[in-house]
Amino acid sequence: MERISTGPHHTTYKVGDINVTSLRDGYVDMPTGRLRQPGDKPFGDNLPSQVPLFDGALRLSVNAFAIDDGQEITLIDTGSSNAWHPTMGFLPQALSEAKIAIDRIRTVAFTHTHLDHINGLILPDGRDGFPQLARLLVPRLELDMFRSEARLSRFHDRAQPLDPGQRLSANIEAIAAPGHEIGHTCFRVTSEGETLLVWGDIVHVPSLQFDRPEVTWEFDADQEQARATRLRILALAADNAYYVAGAHLDSPGVGTVCRTQTGFRFEHL
Image (tube, rainbow, N blue to C red; front, side, top):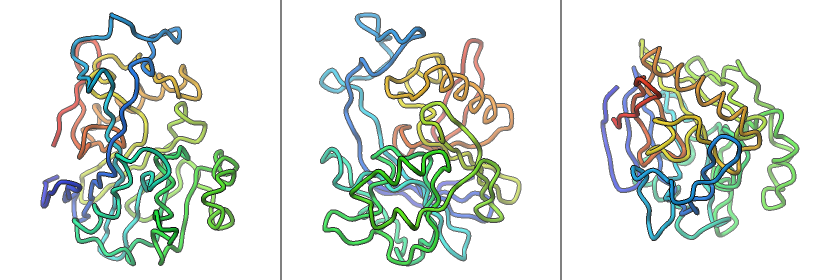
């Protein structure tokens, strides 16, 4: 796997004979209390010093990923558009910078249905973000959640269920990763002997949760399940030498995972 182009809002990699582009939608600053120790205990003065803070807050990158097999492009997550903080919503600029033609994006698949992953379907001016969209895949267990989003009402009937084990294409397979949300899904991208695991919210704070994967997030729907899934997915990546790409890993959010004596370590690519 090699990096073939980069800019302020994008980085493109070659995975086998597929191009995968990390698209930076922006970032969001969150209070440190979002991090939870076992037993749903927030950190106080005991927040490890390895965690960088910005004016006392955690800074989370927000990334989406475009997978180009040469025929069409599958987009994993869409960012937040203008539905949340003004520090996000830069996906259109990222696509332009990466020279990705919007009309080639025919499939959009969501890791889960939280607002910073789905609202990029609609641009701030109200137009469709992907006018040639032919297939919109939403984790089956979260279809009702997606269809409760009034801003996305024009897409409610277009959403198709996404199930674990489903193949989106010859190179992309959905993998169950529940916990952060009930239908949370990862995507295994394989080409020419190389594998990239694209995940959503397996890790929110990479400076801490690789080293201490038992640490969860306040907004995990099921913290115990999220913890177990994180351990399973990190082990899957480390033990199989998969590359990984994460929605909230520091942009561009792509690298490798290896085991340590007590946890895991992430290395940027």
